[in-house]
Length: 628
Image 1 (cartoon, helix red, strand yellow):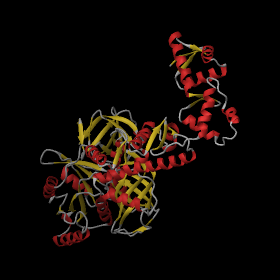
Image 2 (cartoon, one colour):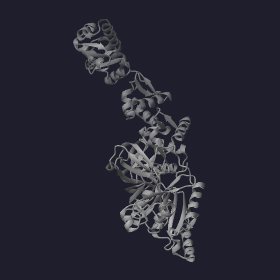
Image 3 (cartoon, helix red, strand yellow):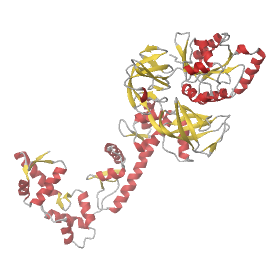
Image 4 (cartoon, helix red, strand yellow):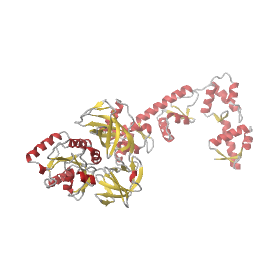
């Protein structure tokens, strides 16, 4: 199915609206001021019946320079442009600007329509045609058909219709429906008994009555109550159609022209975009770095600052990579086209394509940034996904985020991810998270550096406690992700786990003759050992007493049940075994019973029981403990 949007463009009063009426019988000027002044101000809409029974939507855009913003709002979804030029005036300033805009938006096909043929003689018409051919050289209309018509006498209208039908049949591509739908809003109004209605061009995907939607950038949620295409109710609408959407539960004030209606979670909002910028060949301005501009995307107009990433200025006909830093949040996708106009006075200076819809803030003249943008512009799907993984691995972004970010269809995206994992360019953390192997190597180097320093400071310890390692190695809220990376480094024989500690694979804790001496002192203390300070006082010649003590705790030979109470592992296990036997027999154990079993004072029994409570081994119920 081919769903086509035809758009007009051209100078004010060159007969665009009259041409559409001659083609369709529909008057597109609908508001009082338009009829009074005889010019188009807002977007107008009509449709053309095609030979196969389908209808092509037609957008009538304003030609006056004051309403270029409204023209841009309608130009984004055009598949076929009719560049309208009056025979009695020829190429005019707004004709040139509109042609530049159509070129920047990458409109694929077009026809040059010379109107008001009845107002000039053949010699003049021939001169105008030659002039137009010179003006469109180097543009997408260089080899386009040029058809003179009179909207008033009807001369040439049928020939124009046939040319449109032929172009649609031969060249215009079928839209991709297998992506989430998206509609930039160009009109908002209320209908009594129905509520809020928006109109726009469905630029991708398909939508049906009942579908949930999200309004971007506000992220307000709604659902489709009703759909209309060409003023007829439909159950489903397709990319390439002009659509009116009745949104449930929303007020007119909830929406703004330029908002985007889309599938929930199918878009990201952003305050920055990376772009390939092209300046129009006839632009008379030199655009300096940090110049303030107007960004036009869909029906949205946002102020921004352009950061030129590899130069200080850009002039007519030149292209470069740049970053736009926006003054308002917008929702865009990689691959979208846009137009830029100068801040003041308002004049179109250029535009281009979005290479990254949610980038990091870049430093200028960074070779890595420029290389990455070159891949995003010219690379294969696999290379683009690899570049996105490099950018976002440190955030552990989900695959769904990356798929939206790259704007590669999901099936193709999933296939390329599998290839990247297979050739070890990427590493799978879990079903939702994949990171680039370069980042995994970076994490390996980080772990090695951190543990090398730790082992030098703590040669007697088996390694860093796993909880401490988690918090220092990678500050990320999902511990399962950190553990997965740690386990990967263990499998690769970079790290090892010893007694609940993380160590370098080839590290061996040093032995110290004093270890056995201190361990024996705690072991002799049984269930009531001396405090570390008391034992340290007994061995004044041991200068590294704390390091030795820490190594015994790290290795699990001593259990620190309280700051100043450490039990030898043999007595700790014996106490735990006695407590479990007593609870299994009596259903619980009291402090007094624990004290008697250990044959020690209340202080040690309290320390052990509270330690078990903190470890969720026991739970206090009244004055007794039960096993948890």
